[in-house]
Image (cartoon, rainbow, N blue to C red; front, side, top):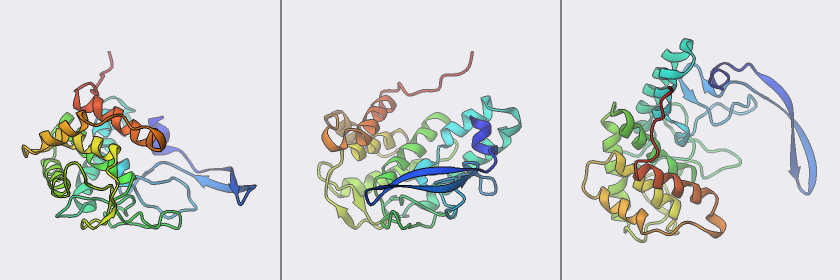
Length: 242
């Protein structure tokens, strides 16, 4: 699997879509999931799309594991990918609020698309980004900027009201959706794994006091909630090979 992530050649096939009540097919080509030059994960390996990334897809904590136990020839790449993601997080997030966009270019600049015109804002994909840098700090403690990012993000959400903050914002902090989303509460608690400021305990307490998501948000936010419980209880950990 790791070899294909890096080295899969371009393949072409038919994708079947449902459009305007009818079935349609489209020929799609796709290659490796990582950009070899930037050492970053792509939003999509499809060759028909512009090449960009999604900050919430960056998982340097896991790249470190793949460098240790993955294919020997790719070990340098995964270490470089981990460093690239750690350098990317500060570029892709606002220097005051700590909020990042759903989609971004390799330089961290927000990206919008025809199917997600709001992707330059902090929206549902972006919920996950803080969890990714915080788990990386928890496991490897290689980049102190990740601690600064968690403090910055939690300071912003604290300023919005711990029990009332919304779930969608422009990157400079203008509210777009007032719903107090359980999935965001969950990931903001995971951010405490890297945070320095004592306020971080408030975010963990908020997770413990939040009921499991149900109804419409049961799937996506429910998964964030369950993963956050594992992270914050210390049960999401490295399982090394024998």
